[in-house]
Image (cartoon, rainbow, N blue to C red):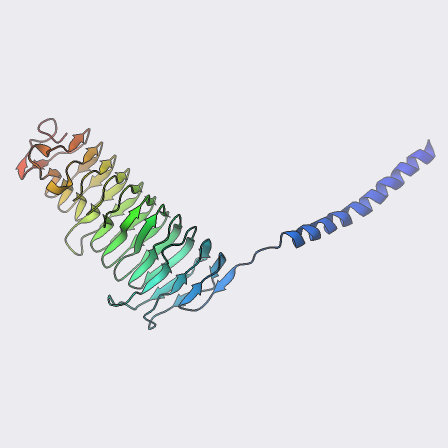
Amino acid sequence: MKNDVNKSRSGESISRTVWPWMGLALAVLLAAVHPAHGLTPVSSCGQTLSTPGQYVLAGDLDCSGTSANGINIAANKVVLHLAGHTLSSADCDATKGIAGINILSGLAGVQVEGGTVKGFNDGIVLYSSKSRVNGVTVTGACMFGIAVSGQDNRIDTSVVTQSGIDGIGIGAASGIHVISNDISGNARVGVDISNFSNGNFVEDNLINNNGLVDHEQGGVAIFNGSGNLIANNSINNNFNGVELESPGNILQSNTVNGSVGSGIFVLTIASPSTLQRNTVLGSAVVDLSDDNAGCSGDTWSKNIFVTDVVAGVSDGGPGTGCIR
């Protein structure tokens, strides 16, 4: 019995000695089979990312005086980590294409995240599809903060501010999701939808203080496109809250307060539109406005407001007329 005990203890001692080394050997083997993928540094203005992979902005990068794009993305499945750094340029020339980050059309699976893009003509030009911009501050663009086209792109959890024209411009696009962003203090429009852009979604954003510089438009404007959903946004203290100039869109469950002009207004060319469950208060001119006599097929329902106008004449306020 004693010998058996000693034999067992001897075996236990051997296993304690051998197994750690076997574990280390296994780890080395796995590392060889699955090597770690490092981040490729981005450290110069005008650099083109032409191979799929993970890239990181190595430090703050000022491209002023180059009159060129800061970073070009020219491959599918590029992930660009700004890593908390700032990509900037004081160059502003509408005759040239000068974007902070230029994502070419025809690409897919691109992501830009986690830093600041300051200045340039346009902060980010996103013309690919199934791509994402998240956690980025885009500020002080000479023209557009983010210009987006293509299909099924997503812009979320970002800040877009102090653009010389519009914060986020959606053009020739479908399936774009603009979600949970702060889009404030842009010269003309916080979010504009134009150029036959259909089936896009603008939801759960903070959209404040837009249009005050240019004294036109304001929070959200749909210039051209149908099937777009504007929902659950907080749209406050803009020149106008929401402007609809194209038919077949839905505006629902938004809070629109303190507009300098109108809270929500629908032009004659925007009929039919659906406007429901919005809270619109404190507008200096009028809370809700429809340029179509008798609302001409527009559906207004369950909105909270005080003042309204239809075809230039008061509609009598809540509970009367075609605005409800």
